[in-house]
Image (cartoon, rainbow, N blue to C red; front, side):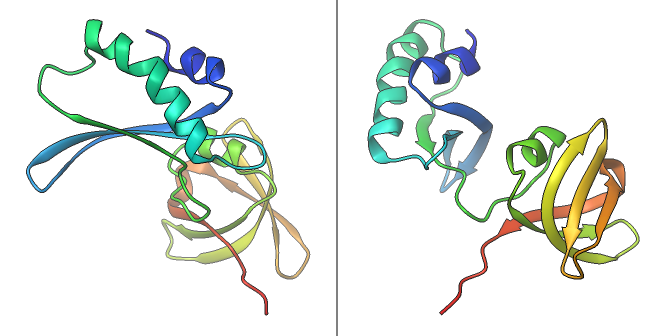
Length: 141
């Protein structure tokens, strides 16, 4: 089963997946995105595609609940692919040297992330030097 291809069939793109446990229940979350944003119909369409497939090719041996959603406006960036999918968005980064950086993601090339900081300068960071990263939205009145 190719989850990315099934997402494409539903008109969305795969952002990430996670298997977690909450209140004693296993939850398999599939995060999707698309230009213009994800809506409830997108989630329902993908669920309708995946449910019969998962009935035959169950991805886990245990009982779980399937959740499909957008990763949200403010989300963790944990892979180079996450950074690539977030080009043009604002990000807060903590480096392994405890440096705090805010900026807009301009590009990702190889293992390097290019940002425009508040001082309108362009900087680059090696992915392996990033401890934590998260997109954020600046709300203006």
